[in-house]
Image (cartoon, rainbow, N blue to C red; front, side, top):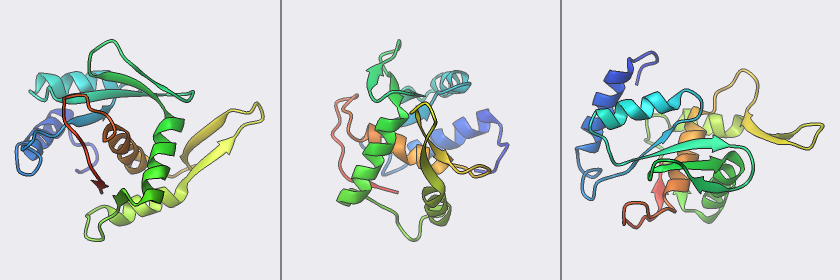
Amino acid sequence: MALRTPYPGVVAYVRALLSRPPLNDPPATLVIDQTGVGRPVVDLFRQGGLHRCQAVTITSGDGEVRGEHPHEWRVSKLLLVSRLQAMFHSGEIRIAKDLGDAQDLVWELQDFRATTTETGYTRFGARSGKHDDLVLALALCAWSSTRNVYGLSFGTVEA
């Protein structure tokens, strides 16, 4: 989607995508990053009829806990990144060459770094001036694929 697309347009676009095969049978689960100002975005999706969504707040630390809402989670970036790395190494995630944003995803993955501060805190993200939105979206997908929130089983993730 184009940058600066109004959120109601994003909701309508995603709702249309999720209503088509293969995403509608069985119904796909939408995973939304609600870190920071993301909670109102999650509310827009739910008000727009997309109730099968998991809202994830990305945290520090190394674990995951359920949030206040039954389909909300607090998941550490360390867990998201390590799960993504493991799934790449095992071959559970492959990047399709004909994927529209494949090259952008590869560039973001190449720029993604773990750095340790002087106090021993490890930070994950893109190098200064770079983006990591696609990496984090894929990490959320990889994490969610191991959850059975709606009674569904998940297999291999293909980006």
